[in-house]
Amino acid sequence: MSKIKIAIVTDWLVKIGGAEKVLLDILECYPNADIYTSVYNPNLKEFHNYNVITSYLQKIPLAYKFYKLFFGCMPGAFENFNFDKYDLVINSNWALSKCILTKPKTLHIAYMHNPTRYLWADGKDYFLRSMPKTLFNLLKPSLHKLRNLDFLASRRIDKIICNSYTVQKRIQKYYRLESQVIHPASDTKYEKLNRIEKGEYYVALGRLKGFKRFDLIIKAFNKNGKKLIIIGEGEERGQLENLITSQKIKLLGYISDKARNAYLQHAKGMIFPQEEDFGITIVDALINGCPVIAYQKGGATEILNSKCGMFFKNQTYNDLNETITKFEKVNFDSEKIQNQAKNFCPTRFKKEFQKIVNQLYATHQKKHSN
Image 1 (spheres, rainbow, N blue to C red):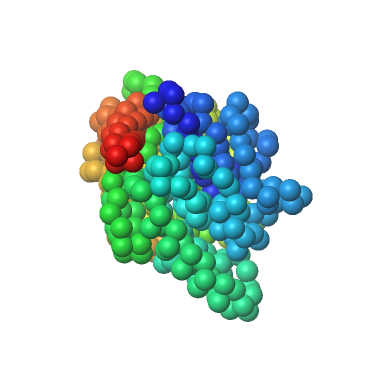
Image 2: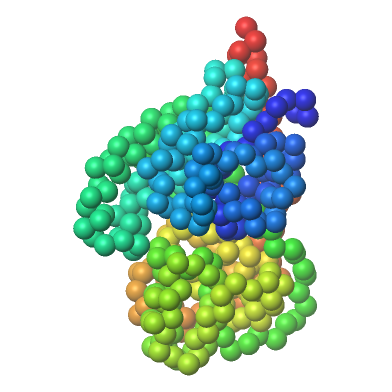
């Protein structure tokens, strides 16, 4: 596919998280592709070697820091892009980048991380965590309009690939569309572990956002008195720091990947309390031989088995603490844990992704050459 013109679209590029790491894997498959996005943080060194094309929103000072204020403008921003010169558009989508317009000759494939979170099932909670209820009530009419636009835009996509069977069910429920699952990969480097001494602490990691439920972990460890290290940064850091009453809980913020991996390798376990679309941080833990305690919903159920972790059924700190007690009675084998992680390696993802894209493009070309 080296001779065809390819564009890769994504909602915004402001921080490096799971979706951005998937985008980097896709870019390794198509290194000459142009990137289109609403707003871009120029400090993201991972994208310095690519041609990043931004919408008119980028002209607003510091728009990439306050992109949430511009959700209502996102459909227009993406519709304003011109993709006429491209044969293939690949959309790494979790919000309104699906609103792009392409001509029939251009194949539009979306790798969908989730139906737009703030418009569907999680909408109310998403906004009430970051604004007063009165302001949310004022926004309701525009959210209804955005939901209709999001639904209609989903039906302009030629093929949807998604990151988990959990998300596949959501796509069917909200968009009434079929999709194909390709699990994403972790970029954590595999290093075979010999017998490694475990510390007396647990780890939780990720962006400090409300739906990630770090509050639940903190409440559990305030009560159980065990050591906890939280790795990550985000909008809820201040609120979470105020919840901490135990001196055995440390919130480190962002640290290097090397330091993060060292913490995981020596941790008793990682806590994953949220319902996630997939859960790439679980794979990061498994690669480092770290067993996981996870909430039994969402993508976690597609990654973990009894050889590498344990589930808790109710999203309460009491249920989490009861599961921690059971967890500490089990001896987990680091080699078996790492073997499970091999199912989510970058080579596997890129091979599967390129295979389906090639098949879809060949079929599309045949259809439009007649």
